[in-house]
Length: 264
Image (cartoon, rainbow, N blue to C red; front, side, top):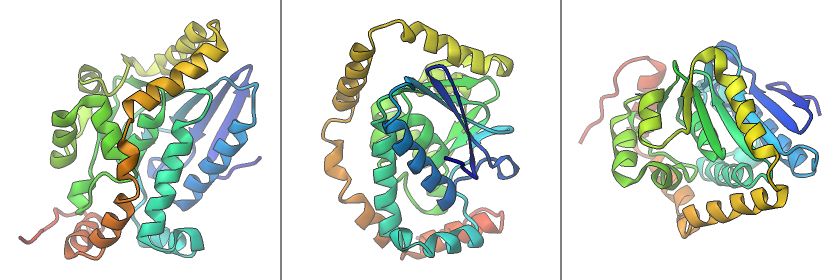
């Protein structure tokens, strides 16, 4: 299937998926999210592909959701994404589908990886970052929290204290700090990023495919136990939050490239 915002290359049992909007640092809009969801459906039926490497074109993995008037207007024209509650429901479905891919997934983090971009990376089984990568959660600076079920996933990876720190401060961290707290698996020089991902593939490829697949499902189930109880609530919370003056101010400040001025 041809994609407008993705580059998909298949070689042997490995698919390499590149987010291809380098001019805006691979920001995520409705089109790229829907194309990724179509790709996941394609991968679900592709039994030849055992591994998927996700990366970004240019100098970023992804800087998260594209907050522009144009991108928001385009999203609202789609019936399934017509309001914030439906967008959140879509985000939850998207995260669960990506996380549940039967292939072993690796995020090759080649630069900025923040917000929804970090969501994509966290959904992968492994995260390998280049030394120049930065990771962060800017959402509370916009007046919103880390949605799409991302807060429980981040907590499962780094623990409650670090999850609160990353979300509440909005401070980006280096690849080496991300490695120290358990957010990523490995840091390598930029020129070695893809070879490091392929080296990991080779370490796993000669192991029992069924055992690897079952291992992925059991670990996911164990690390996300009872988190599903939160998912029905989050879209309702976001719908209410988006009606507040805080979100309006946060997004307006972002568009105007100034610090937000939140009132008490």
